[in-house]
Amino acid sequence: MSVRDRLVDAAFDLFDERGYEQTTVDDIAERAGVGRTTFFRHYRSKEHVIFPDHDRLLEAITNRLATSNADTAVVAVAEAVRLVLMSYLEEGERARRRYAITSRVPALRDREIASAARYQRLFREFIAEWMGPSPQAALRAELMAAAVVSAHNHVLRRWLRREAIDPIREIDAAMAEVVALFTQRAPEPPTGGSLVFVLRDNREPDQVVAAIRAALNATGDRAPDGGSARPVEPSRSQPDRGRRAMPGQPRPSGRARR
Amino acid sequence: MSVRDRLVDAAFDLFDERGYEQTTVDDIAERAGVGRTTFFRHYRSKEHVIFPDHDRLLEAITNRLATSNADTAVVAVAEAVRLVLMSYLEEGERARRRYAITSRVPALRDREIASAARYQRLFREFIAEWMGPSPQAALRAELMAAAVVSAHNHVLRRWLRREAIDPIREIDAAMAEVVALFTQRAPEPPTGGSLVFVLRDNREPDQVVAAIRAALNATGDRAPDGGSARPVEPSRSQPDRGRRAMPGQPRPSGRARR
DNA sequence: CGCGATCACGGTACTGGATACCGTAAGGTG
DNA sequence: CACCTTACGGTATCCAGTACCGTGATCGCG
Image (cartoon, rainbow over all chains, first blue to last red; front, side, top):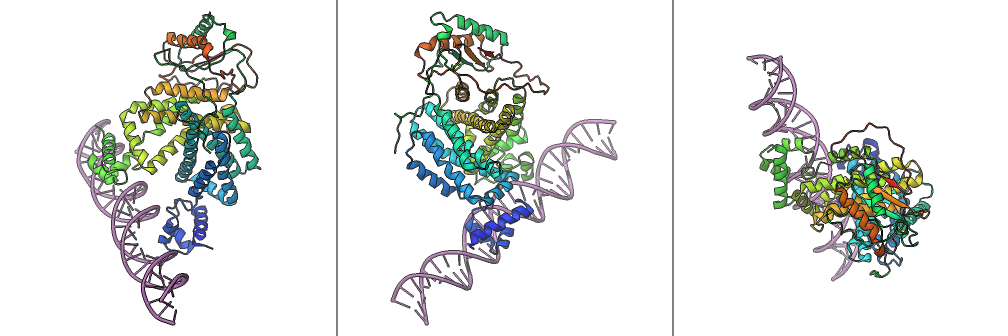
């Protein structure tokens, strides 16, 4: 058994026994039968000893993304994130022990969140590069990355809590939902109707309704039911602005590099 | 000038001059003209001295959510997250100085991410409770919370980098996109009426009407998908909590359904 | 075999963040 | 004035993390 493994085992055991803060690095080193210096040679900090090797995983994911031949960026990322889940699944019970500890120690929870953010950042950059430099694309990339990561975390947490019997199936379903979320807009043409967003209004409902009705009736050039749904961005002062092409799909015309 | 303010000023100045790690707590205390102990009396750690008071903000957001009367959970959360952006905007240049520092120091970046995660968690729980205990709802709550937070962060970062001239407008647009993302999956086509979302707005009625009219008139050059839309979330049964008359946001905005 | 180089380990010392405890001066109240 | 509260400074201590040095084992190579 390697020194690294002995350290990990000692750390997990001690964290279980006394708690994380109550355990010093010296304690861990002593139980593992090594010196304190040796601990820090193998693990950068007391926290690192119980976390998986995110650097390796990030590298693996980077590789998978680079060699992906998915049709859209979301799909590529949704496929890549499975590597993370698989990594946890392979750990088995150890992952659950870690979860039990990190759930109770804020510092460790924060570190785990920070790690997840690294994945999210990687995904965001990948998607953003895929979709090109338009400003809407940047927001969209952000949303997609966040969706993939949080959906993954959702499934992962369910498995960690033993709520998920078949995490593979669940991750597939979750990713399908994420992909659908971002692709479902294209298909059908509008059948008529109006969609109006009015942001931040503190007027009385009656006033608003009256105003809307008035607005609907005032469209002489085009009948209300002939209109199509279309979100409207509120403009602070100029009503002229607020024109925006609806967020596009993962564009095939975009710069897809492969 | 209070001790707290002196400490903050000293900290920001020193972080700018020597960098974060190269500045000790003693340095900060000394420059502020107080003892080291006093520093820790006012700020729990060296990191806390430059970050905004997230606890207060979380409380404010909790209140707003509790008194929200939005139609859907996403909308309620999308409204609430504006408080965070506003808080940063009010800080003005100080927020930008902090951003310059945190961008360079990994430890601070992680802490900021952890703070954002607290908002996301709050949102997730709020949405989940709103939507009920179904398993799909849990995932959906996760996705919504993640979308709102990351969209907010996107706008916030743009403002911090001086890329956003009108962050208010951008946050509205971003939230509109988020809301649209989750409402656009219409199970059935609309029947040809109008669906109106009204979030609170402090604009003049004329402007709102103008925006609506502009939207209805603009149907000629609409985007290809133009999508009809209906919300799929069930409306929540009115909670029982006592309403607090908050000074800022008294009354409901209207909501209309076809 | 012998010898130098490398490597992994242990020990010591130091910096600095964070906590606990104690003493004290200022300000408010009866 | 006596009393209490509050805020502050100082000291001691713990512990994570870094730097440095010494040593024993192992390997490569003549």
